[in-house]
Length: 139
Image (cartoon, rainbow, N blue to C red; front, side, top):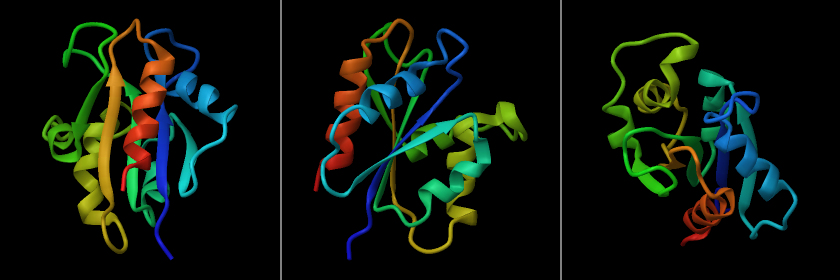
């Protein structure tokens, strides 16, 4: 049995500029997902997202980003690229860099392929969702 790909949408739906993940989640939740792709509302769960990564064949995170490309341009960042941004922070504000940094140390079993799809505000939610789906669905 193959392991599912998971699209894990994170962010704060009440804070404009940090609501990209929840907006993508809402869009995808209303559509049929390809076989083998699961959708996770990661909200502000932080390190609790470890549970969503374990057992996945691929984990595609969706979140707002800043400073990687012009506003609105969709970017794809690998786990190592995001992990390198961790600066020893702990707690809620540590964010995805800290989570990505910890994953190899705490995940049970094989670590899935991990990718972050994001865009800086303002972003086209449909374009970000399409990129996340494409990444989650690839063989």
